[in-house]
Length: 256
Image (tube, rainbow, N blue to C red; front, top):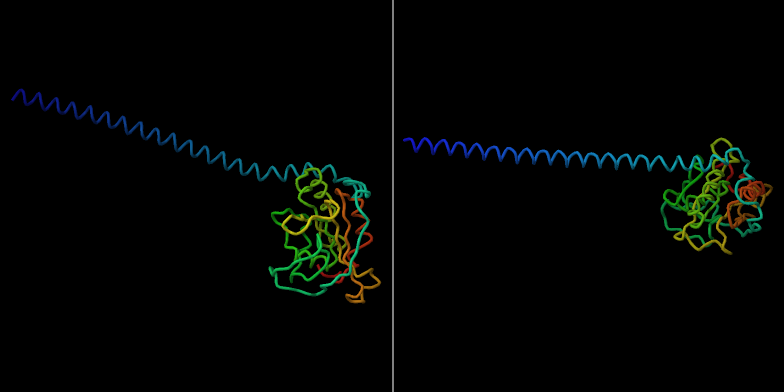
């Protein structure tokens, strides 16, 4: 009987030691899981903070880049007017020729200044776009029919922070929706849109003209597309262009 008691006691001791080992292993496992969970939470927090900072950083940088132009008149932003070539024109067509939004449409000019277009123009409130959010060409041509001047910039300018700041600053000069003289948009022209601008130029101004406000009642007979190409951004040239071809000199000047 004594041996049996000793054996039972030894067995209980062994089980107790095993339980201790198991509990220690479980405790270590839980501690490791808590550490992993803490690391995952910390990484998620850092990623979230990074996303927030990245989202906020762009507008902050843009603000500082464009703020230096806020007190400057349009004509003093960018290069002198000599950076731009003389304006060119060609007979226009497509007045009131609407096609369903999203329909295939091809324009022979880079960029287009007239032609058939989508049903709805882009609202006046937005003045600056990048390749990530630019309206379709068919939409922008409708804006031109309503008297908008469009500044187009190519991929090389899109990669130039200084010129992009100048374009943003120029767009800011035309903010608002109440003054129709501010019918202006700055948009990208990408390699997917069509051929590069001629003569190695990187900026283009376009306007859909009725051939002067005196010809407003002449229908499409005297309508022309107007282009001016520039080697770099020039607020001075744009100011003259928009003075020579105001929104009133367009097929539908009262359209928004």
